[in-house]
Length: 345
Image (tube, rainbow, N blue to C red):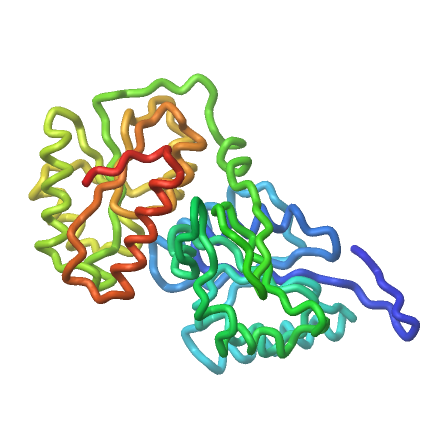
């Protein structure tokens, strides 16, 4: 561990990584490997959503990265949360440690607000949160740029109040996305592919008669009603009527909804305990095609499995409000830029 002598006392540096979703864990692990100063502490918020938490724990158990310390944070009770954070702060003070990097997995997280108010830090990082990260951006040429409303927003300004170095008011985006920098944001691209490729079995075969249909929480999140979502499923069923379609639900899709989809469309249902990229890496025979509505896997699978044909299915969004519609429009624009995903109109 690095020790710094400031003339008065010796202090050690630590980096705090806070995550609450599987993709955030992968991002945090890859970003942690790039840290130069200090030891890395992982803080995991278990959300209470069974499949989300199960995937996070599965990734943690199989990860070869050695965190200096791992803490589980309970946010179901405010008093318990406050106690845990104050104990963490007291422990760092007792151990004579200062926070070098404060890294969040979700810009909008209620969970993150407590941390930047409680800890002083030298650098602030935002990690990838899968396709949800696109909510921060808008399209710009062949890439993305941070939405102007975020550049001087009250939330962004509040992040800097606890920064130790006020001359360097920047937020570092640790991302695999192709993003243009705009102050106060600075882009530092990280390669997530190493995490997946390290798990990939050699000599995998491909079954062109099998299609993986990656589900989405569009009904649960209120973007679409059940009839609208079923119309998308019907299009997939018709397009691949001569193939075996396996439905992989989003980890936040309801059990009732998934069962109804399986029965109505005769899809097989598969619920991997790992994110789909890691699950595919473990298979001796991979599907010939992967299709989804909107998923980070549409960005990563073509890189890890170039032999799989990847498609995104477009859908009618006229019933959405303008903000939600713009978010999905951006998702499809970005996937089109990648030029590795087929858009089904």
